[in-house]
Length: 79
Image (cartoon, rainbow, N blue to C red; front, side):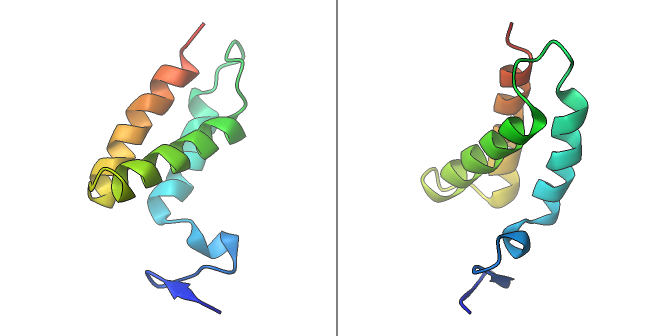
């Protein structure tokens, strides 16, 4: 098993940071009935955007998650 940043990368459950775990609940909370996207899609978008901002953008994980969260909010509130 390969460990990355202290997480077992072979087990997807172990690659979830505490911040992402919190976002799962938050994504469910901001996904109103009128939102065309389910919470799972919002969560996946958050995780992807945060990873891109961190690794390609050179941001800290915290800054990348903050930026990704703003994008998820925009996505969830689109008509």
